[in-house]
Length: 232
Image (cartoon, rainbow, N blue to C red; front, side, top):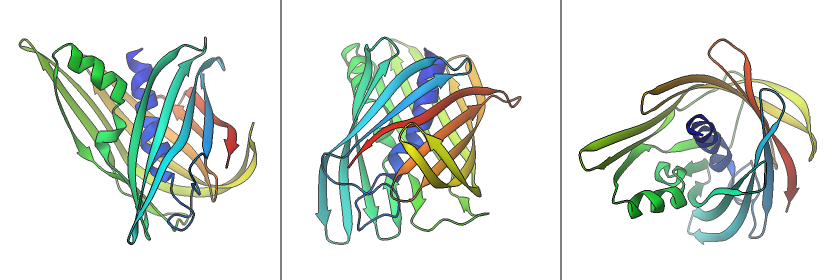
């Protein structure tokens, strides 16, 4: 479950950062009521769960646009693992998401109910409106420190080496799309467990993420995420 949480959290770094209103971002045109569904599969091609996103609020404030995204993750049995709301800001240059929003609010509330003290720090993630092959994108990270009764736990996820590596046409259940391909490396630390992964993301104009593959340190496929449905 810890590894699955880290995987989902790293996916959020991409998914949530590229959702924006039509007049604000090239990627993921947004209007209230827009919804996206992604299926997550493990290395054995078995369904691990489904993540649904819904635009619940979009506000224009001068040159900036802020939006609230409601996220709900269910496991393969249809049980709600966790849900959260995410806040982001869009300018004419692209999308910026507050790193604090990446930690599921439901999980945060559960920890707080257990009298856990939490400190969340990190770097906002950005996706520019203009992408080109060879372009390097800024790193992103989130750090969560928790303590209770002298016991400390730390969660750290760093996404580095984000690079636009090509253009491809890719097919998912939601359709076939022309995409930019972005590669990135993700390292995570959670309690005594350390993980290093690499990601390959297919990103389409006007659609957003169509597909994402996550590989282990030795290059073996660990998980796959695909766009199942898109409703504008």
